[in-house]
Structures are given as structure tokens and as C-alpha cells.
Image (cartoon, rainbow, N blue to C red; front, side):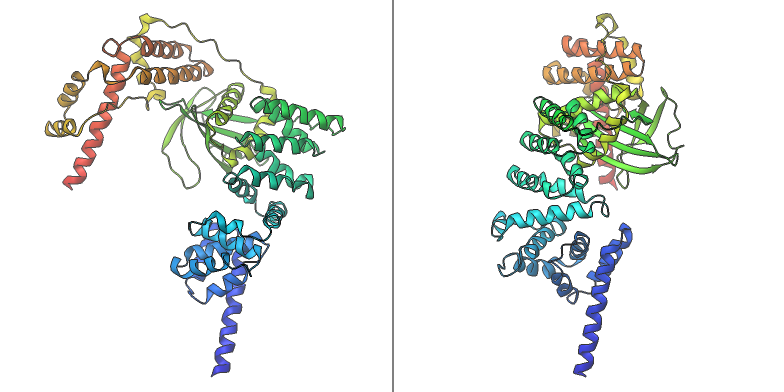
Amino acid sequence: MTKGRVIRGFQERRELEEALQRLSRLTDEASRHALAQELAGKGEPIIPVLLRHLGTTNPLLRGAIGLVAHYLPREMIAPPLREITANPQRSDQERVAALMILERFLDEPVEDSMYASLRDPEAVIRQSLREVCEYQDAIPDIMLDYVAQLQEEPVDVVFAVLDHVRDFTAEQVIPLLQLLAQDVRVPVARRAVQVLGQTPHPAALAVLEVLQTLLPAPLEQEAERAARKLRLRSVPAPERVSHPWRALVTPPDAQGTQAFWLLRRRENAAWMLLGVLANVELGVQFAFVLDQVPTDFVTAAPGEPVLLPLAGRDEAYGMAWFMEMPLSYVRRWLRQLFLQNYRSAYQPPVVYRHQIMPFWRETESAGWAPAPEMPTPDPDLVWHTLELLRHPAMDSWYVEPPRTAFQEHQWLQAGLSTEALHEALRHIPPDLFPQDQWTTLADRLTYLAEWFLAGNDHERARLTVAAAHALRTLPYERNPFAQALVARGLMLVFEELQREKDRWDD
């Protein structure tokens, strides 16, 4: 009987080992998660199998271990992982893998002292960089994930990584250097630009030629010097390649947020889509990529509006009103937004930094549109500015007035009726809104006016400039545009209160 149990136990462990290896080779996300859940369902027997492979240098296998750990009960897997991290008899590779799984897959807090206790942190840096360089073709997102992790590390850690890039081929490290050269931490970006200038390869020169037109001063001069060094070393200039792109852009909303859809024609006639969400205060905030967008997905011709979903893949942010815009304007807007990332210290998404390079290189012939000459503000148009609110570009423009719980109670008692809404509007004091709130909205309207001008809608640009001027110069009680924005905002408040009331009544 004992011999039989040993044989069965050995067979089970072998099957679990094979299943774990199979999981590391799967690429379909649904299949990966299904198999990981199945293995986690084995409970205690799977844990020694997972721990045995913590020393692997294969990031695919390590990711499979983490995925199974994610589906295991926390109290079952976290203690043995913490025990390994604290055990100096374990290798640095095993301890770092355990720390990574605790952090990334289990959301467990990990003290910095655990990393400091490693015998050779430099060896861990070299090994992680080697894995990223060697597996980036097999795992396209591994480089992006690696850079996203480096963003959370101190600058000294990034410098340590950059000190080791010369151990690898130019083809392996240029994608990493391209991403780090767009880090908003200026010392990191500068060091990456300098290393690019020490990498005699046409692809490095191609990256530097783009960066010298995008980066803020003095980084742009650094990129220019680095590019010059490569040319002096007879590095051949990269081929200038044009490629068809389309750019669909939403109007900026009252918060200064815009969405960009950049479409690149693929060889199979489909489109590749780079979706970007940006804000005038922060810069580029979010990006996603869809590899195969059907040609008939966007049927609108240039100059025609089109309703499209804001986000890609499984995320849903509703529909948005897009208009195709000239590439020269889009290039200027995206460059301004990217520079804002440096001013706000908001890291642009690594997906954006990776995918935007072909756009800059392949649309170079479109140039940069100069800042348009704005219409002269016409105070006589103040009442006509209300016509703007009928345009879809203004759908998200409103000012929600502050209110007290007592006022909400009064409105509810009045039945949230149209009469109650009008009564509430009549009793809004003129000084309820600070002037800087109107000034900020006026600035946002200036961005909207430029969007109208780029779309050749000069009449609405005139009205938008007039509305912005009115917000800056007229008091609330004499400004019909400001009052209309508040009426919209109060209407939304009433609708929200009605929904809450309906939920309570149910």
C-alpha cells in the first residue's frame, strides 16, 4: 500500500509539473486563467510544485507560477512565499521571484528591507534585464511591464539597469532605451538619451531624431547632440518612410480631456488603432492598441462626425463624438500634451511611448501646424453663444453648483419638478462661483476654439472665443452662457437625486 501511494504521489506531481509547464506556454488569456484556476483547485499539493520553480530564469514559467498563486487562498500561499523571501539560504533569484509574486499577483505589502537583504542586487538587475531582452519577441508586453516597474523604482535603480545595457545587442536594448528616454524624470531620460548616443545603430539614430523634436529643453539639445555623435561615427541615417495614417479626435471637454484615435493602415487592408486619452493639465494619461480594426469600422469621411467607443478591449467608457483632423494639427496637439507630462510629472503610459514612434516617423511629411490665429472676441455675440450648446461638442460642458443637504431635501420635497429647478436657479447667488473657475473654463474654451478651427468650423470658433471672453469679463448675473452652463449642471443634479430616490423607493 505504501509503495502504491508513493507511485501515485509521484505520478500526481509529474502531472502537475507538466500542467504548469503547459500553462507557461499558453498565449490565450482565457485558456491561461482557466488552467491556472484548475491547478489552484488542487490546493496544497500544487504549492511545492510552484515553490520548486521559483529559481527559474524563464519569465514565462515565473508568470505561470504567479498566476496560479493568484487563484490560491491567500492564507495558503502567502506564508511559504514570505518564508522564502526571509531565508538567506535561498538564492537571490528565488527570493526576488517570491517577492514579485507577493507584490504583483497577491497585492501583499513588501518591505524595502527585504530587497536590501539580497546578497547581490546587481546580479538580480542583470538577470532581470537579460530575461527582458531575450524574451521580448516571445512576450511582446514583457518590456512594457518591465519599464512600468522601473517607474516605481528610485532613479539609482534605473541607472544601474542602464549601466548593463552594453552587455546586450543594440536590437535588444533600443526598445528599452526608447521607453526610458521618454521618462518624465529628467535624469532618467537624459541618461537613456546619452546611452542611445553611444549605440551605433540606425534604429538608435531614428529614435534620437524623433526625440530631438519632442523632448523639452534641455533634453531636446541632449538628443540632438547624441544624434550628431552617431552621424560623426558614420551611422547611416534611417530611411524616411511615409505611411497612411488617419487621426480622429474628440473636442476637449470642460475638464480639458480629449481622446485621440490614431489609425494606421496595415498591409492586409485593416487598421491598427492607437487610442489615447489626454488631459491639458496632466498630459497623456492612457493608451491602448487594437491590432486588427476592420476597414469599415470608421466609415465617416474627413469632416464628418462619428460616434465611437472611447476605450478598447474590455473597458467601456461610453461613446464619444469624434472628428477627423489634419495630421499636422494632431502632431502639434500630441507634442504639447507630451510636454505637459513633464510639467505635471505625470508618467505617459508605456504603451503610448512604445507605439507613438511609428506615428511620428511616418507622418513627418505632414509637418507641424502653427498655432492658429484666434478670432477677435466680439462682445456683441454674447447671446449668440447659447447656440454653441446645441453642438455635440458641448454635450459634456456644464457647471454643477455646490449645494447643501438642506437644499437637496427642499428639492426632493418639491418633487424635483421643472418649477423647483427654475426656483433653485433664481436663488443662486452671483458670487457662488469663484472667478478662477470661470477663467479656467474660458481657457478650456480656447482649446475648443482651436479644435473648431482645425475642423474648418470658423463660425463656431468665433462663438467659442466670444463665450470664453464673456466668462472672463462679465459677471454671472449678466452672462447668459455661464447661466446656461449652471442650468445644465443643476439639471444633472436633479437627475442624480431622482435616481437615488428611485433606488430608495424600490
